[in-house]
Every structure is written in C-alpha cells, then in structure tokens.
Length: 136
Ligand SMILES: [Fe+2]
Ligand SMILES: [Fe+2]
Image 1 (cartoon, rainbow, N blue to C red):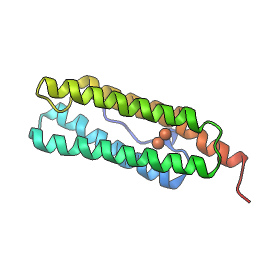
Image 2: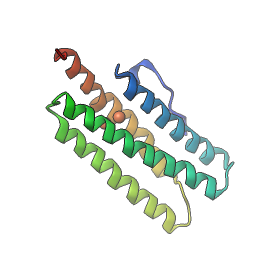
Image 3: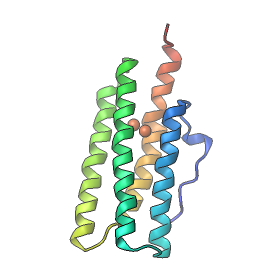
C-alpha cells in the first residue's frame, strides 16, 4: 500500500489544523510501513495505533472547538463524520484483535481513504467559511 504524500491539496490553510493533519499522516504512514515490512512487534504497533487514535480524537475536539468559535454552519454534519470515524475505527480494532492482530489491510485502507477524503471535502470547508466570514 502506498503511503500518503503530503501535498498542497491537503492543506486547509489553517496552520494549527494542517500541522495536526501532518502528524496524523506521519502516524498512518508509519503503520503502512509496518504492515508492508513487518518490521515491528505487536506491542510497538499497538502503541503507534493507540497514539494515532488518541491524537485524532484530540484533533477532532480542537476542530470542533474552532467550528463552534466561528459559528460554523456545518458543525453538526462535520461532528457526525468525526463520530462515524470513531465508531468505525473501533470496529476495525475489534475485528483485528479478534484475529489476534493490531492492524489489518482493510483498517489501513480505511484510515488512509477516510483522512484524505475528510480533509479534502470537509476540513477544507472550514477555512472557506473563515475566509468569507472574517472575524472583526
Ligand atoms: Fe481534521
Ligand atoms: Fe474534521
């Protein structure tokens, strides 16, 4: 599986959010590398996956706080997408651990596609709103 390449297309223009997305992508890429090369023990892979999930949940909270602050009209819809992510990743973790694994191909594909789609389709719109409704 190809790693995610950070490009301008993934840039929302909100520095704090972009920095966090880059950290998330680094962690996803680490997992893709592990899966590809079988280089780490389960316990270390577990630690990276846990870090990724915890970091993502905090990132979602910060994004939601920002959307509240700027009275973003699509907040609820956006929050719903974050919620679905949390639910789905929990399902992937459960089915991986049922087969005594930490990560699976399907999980990595989900992580990769979800973040790319969510960033380009939903996170991007936050800055579009900010630009058209500048703060006084
Ligand atoms: Fe985000
Ligand atoms: Fe988001």
